[in-house]
Length: 579
Image 1 (cartoon, rainbow, N blue to C red):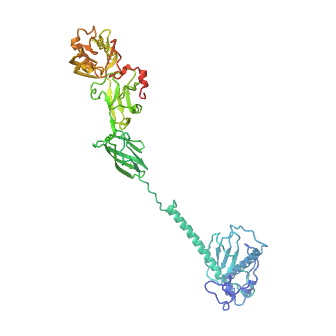
Image 2 (tube, one colour):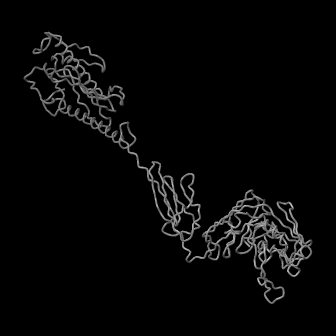
Image 3 (cartoon, helix red, strand yellow):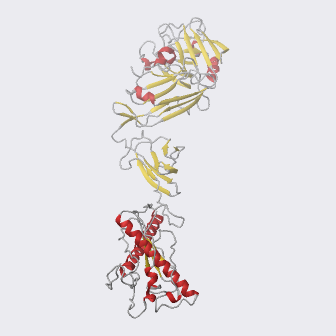
């Protein structure tokens, strides 16, 4: 291949400074003699050549004599480089013609430019997935031995085909690498640096933005605060609606509520801490102060204060559900075995079935029972038989704000507790005019008596004592026989125990002692002597039973306090809330 002095030729320029080839021997430029350049032999790639460079007097004039080992070593190295270049040139020519392309692994071989500096070769390895080529370029001048860097380019980077340098023609010199070659090598280095930098920057970004390496700085997202939900505080609520406080994104740790007078409003917190609900009943026209605290999983607390108002009764009709008997009246004595449980509303109830769902009772020991409406205001509860002595009973009417019907709302909730004392049952037999007394099923006394006369017969059936007074004024005008009429009376009577609401009592009657035990002469009451009346009064009380038989009168009506036991159990149990 001919050489030119064109500085743009790929193999005819040198880096930095071009030496003047007319002023220096060819040997100084190539490191070998002319004969050596002409005796380069072909060799198989990867195999050593058999050519031996001449030394001593056979060398070209001007070439330093081979007087030292260093000169021989230098010439040998240069000759080897030139021989490799010639071999590569033949290989390239064969590859270019397509007649002798060697088999190569496109993915594993890379073109290599070997640049001799007189001692060691600097090599640039450039990946190429198509084929591998090697170009040997002798150095311009010998210099100190240095390690050449190896640069690897990504396979995707397009690489211009390498410049082929063949064996020098006789009488010519082999120039060193040109400027374009060095630019190519520099570009390759720059591309590798950029690629390595991009990889480094990408890893750095991954480390700082994701779950990267051990030295990365991680950012933990903030945990949202727990949220507390409360009733609509802008509008008053019906007191039948409970106050419910709930938490999301955490759990409630405490909820406190106070009534308008500053007393605690009891409530319960669910086991999971998500809701709190009041257990004490609310009232109309009231404001309740609530303070709630919740905590999230990070331990951060959220606290909220709010006020819940209930609707006013200014334009609302309400009715109370009273209990009978009043608990404080029987707190010391308890009740008798015949006492039904009673809720007495102050206004008629038309929504009976709905109201009955809000009536609750617990009985210990457990005994069967059922609710029954004796009229539009009174609903009673009893079992098929009298209560067992010692029974404890709890009743509740959860009706505050409840629609009782016809626009009437329940005014408040109510509840009561009772204890049943010993069983006291008196059996009044009109056929014998005897009153027989049983305590807990055992007869303990019997005494003469007088029932209602044929004109005023006593009601038949079980009667339950609803009240007792040491004395009362009895006036016949209260049931229609007034002053000036036959049978009129008005007098003070002692030791009175009411057994119905239409004027029937067990009481002391000293004026009829002569007829007691033999005839019925009263206006419907059970007459006893003063002594027997005192004995009876000392032992019988509210809820105890007087069963009247053979009086000739009608059965005590269910509505006539208390005619409950006159209703057969099958009828009572079926109920009448929907009738």
